[in-house]
Length: 295
Image 1: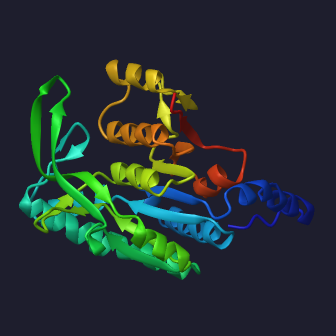
Image 2: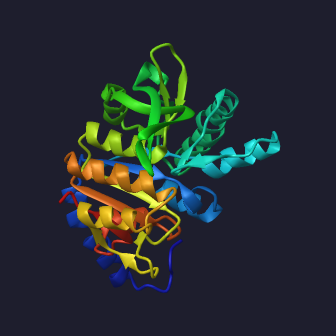
């Protein structure tokens, strides 16, 4: 929304201040995990779509990976099923997988594509099954209390490989890829993969300049609720050990840390409830979250 109280000189100054960032990220890939309130609040949805289109138009290559937890839970409730999570990962039996695929690959993905296109972008919706570009196998998850005990949580996937050629092809044609986190197994079976994990791995494979994870919190918070603006691996281990980091934040932090260690230069967990959070993070000095450092 334009604030008409700003003078022309101030507006020009704001635009000029973005120039160094536009130059720095020219032709660079930026992977964005889109989730939380930014996906459900009407105003924030439009803010996000406009931000992505602007980044593309000024010469960057945004790649959007989305979740859809609330929408999946809504549908499960309607059919009389209760969503279950273990260590932040959704337990996915065959019936739940069919619903997950329907919600993520159909409803949510197409809504995001339509929003971006409505604001002047050229978005294309994909799941990892398209061109088999995200290959996966069944994830057996170590029990946090007893790591030797492996938990079977159903059709939840562990990424075995990502073929970047499809994404690169779309980027070269000025399209914006919008990816639902569904992988494909050796026998064509579908796997539900945590969207934060997909975004992190994709950022590694595409050698992205930035990975930005949108959340429903100001970033990573300490026990007293204060924002931690920068985190090292050692600090993250301590926060997990004392229980400060738990639930859905665990896969988020894990994928952010893996991406940082694998060469993604800038990894940020930001507050998706802030209007135009993406532009604030990428085109200004005003970061709105936590930066994850590789060492």
